[in-house]
Image 1 (tube, rainbow over the protein chains, first blue to last red):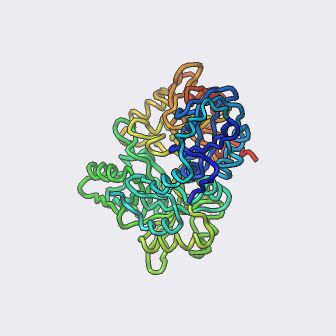
Image 2 (image 1 turned 90 degrees about the vertical axis):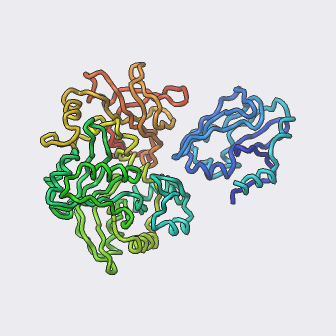
Length: 128
Length: 362
């Protein structure tokens, strides 16, 4: 069973976000990396780019397929994990820690209410 | 309803991820495609390839008959030989690419792609004279491929001393069952392929896995054949892509008659049609089948296969391109571009056998 840490919020498209002081760190879930298989390339936005809730802001490619990453919230990118460009396999090894993708300054914290709790996300995975 | 190979339960036990391929439920990977790929490049891996089709063609005139359908010359074969060939339509397009085993001068065992098996069988049967018998044996035969630099040693450990040279086969009695073993494969490595009745093949697969030969799925099979520049039907070859366009000249013998010969000879002589080129991306990005390819700013073709090559650690593509005739056949080192999600990435033309042409990065 894939890991679903209790301190994060989730999307149905298998992204996670951790919010602290109006900033959100975003990545893809353990389930997502497992389904993708060996990740060989990541395309992420640049610092200063705007991302929009529900829209794609990047791509993860595994040996098998390309997969869009959807923004769990709207905001402005303030940090990008450059290490993923050189070592995309971090996404397989450490999806919740080393392989965070971007940090965004949230536009509207109310958007967080629409995200999935760890319990809800777990239920979705079990239903799949 | 998807078909299952005799190894289905073994795949389940090994926790393989299963996918549909050629009408079969097949393992795409057991753990990691890249790990499986590296196991084959550095040691040994084993594949269930029981989905492949086996067709027996028998009769006094079998050799001449088949030679009229195949681009390669099977009349040059001896008993115990295996030959790669393309079967072509009159249009020059490929019906399939396959391996021909000469069992006897009047008896040939054809190993064809799973997704083309029914089509191939019907095609061969429709062309066969009445004294040539065409039989579909696919249901009764299972097949495994053991591949990698140490594969032959592992095979000899389990089966005893084997004397098989590249592109040859031998029969082996294994616990009362008769197996066919050939020194062939589809990975760019040394290896053997083993054909036999389902029970024996299942037993052997498990024995190899017990010996720590890595079970490998179709994912690694595809990255391995791609890295070695080997064509895959539906990508580099098809009804609409001829073997001349796919750069398979060594397997086309123009000094004999076969269906499609005129078209293929013209393409070859006049530099007509498109050509398959190998491309090495200068920047990171994963080219996929169908992505557009540019040369000198103009769209010239499309990617037929592309991926990150796990052993060479490069982003590579095979692309079918239509270029001015004076450049045809002289693209080495030239700069192309591959369009990936609206961005054009630079790519250098390199020989299609990437594995031979490119030094692996450390």
